[in-house]
Image (cartoon, rainbow, N blue to C red; front, side, top):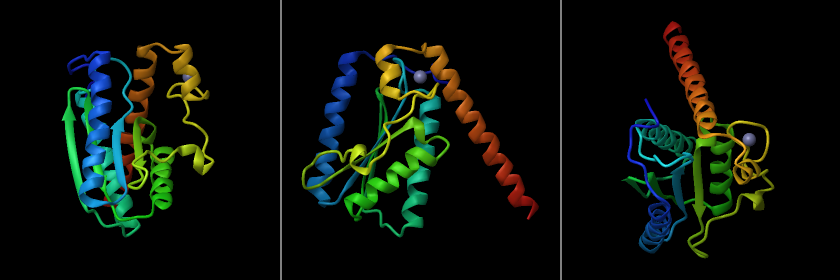
Length: 188
Ligand SMILES: [Zn+2]
């Protein structure tokens, strides 16, 4: 699993991807009239479609599915998009906006890989993303240090190498702990 085995993209492609994401959200809202989960990945640098990011995407989808099952939320529609600008998903679910946002914040904050996911919730009425601050949640922490992510990225406090080392460490810890859990289960 690597983060440099994809194609680099430029700023224009990144902006177009954002427009396309909003378009895909609106298509889902128009079609189903349900709240929409818009999943994208937090990958620094110019390469967004690596084997590492595909791994993170699949793990995010699994975490979302587990959350739907645990909370008896039906899955109305789920679309995956694998762009050069990164993998994304648009998921329509019949759930109240507030509950859904809270569940998605919980995944982002508590799953070992959650910091590498952006799980937005789009209100079908306003057609806008529900803000994290409405739920009195702290803004997201930097991948490398204890500071708020916004502050470090604005100040360019960490090098790309430093950030990817932090990401790879997180993934390694996650894989180690899940294989440990799997072997524990086998013992039972
Ligand atoms: Zn930092």
